[in-house]
Length: 166
Image (cartoon, rainbow, N blue to C red; front, side, top):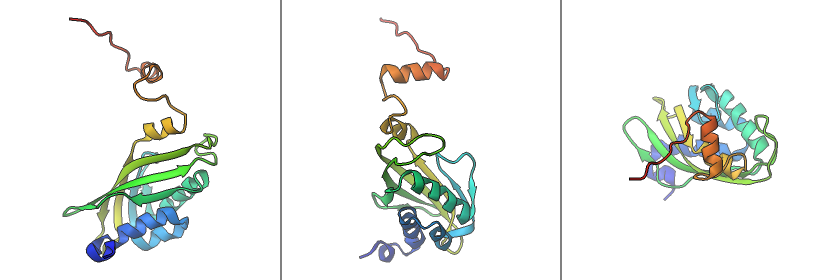
């Protein structure tokens, strides 16, 4: 049985995920409300409407030409929202936000938190994923737990604490 048949209310969600991997910026208009409010760790400010989301996706597709976004578990539907676990994977093949292409492959897990409009189309979407982990995979940030990460935290103003021995 298809996901849409088991969860009829999730049809726009399935279409939303397909739009991310489909490389057609206009595909978001069919599943998103015109008043869409979208945020993810790469957006500076919330995006408004399917067209702005399509522009955002186009920049991702240009930088990661082989990117795929897929559900990696059962969506969890509540009274007013749906949480969709997902995986984003692709090769950084072109510049993105001033960062030159690394040629490295990135795979990060995340969650889309989706609130539908009255007609079922997506009204509010927030994407959560580990941007630090993506930076490590791209070779832009030091791996966790090492001297490089500690040095970065010092530069950010978090400082280092000397552990006292008891």
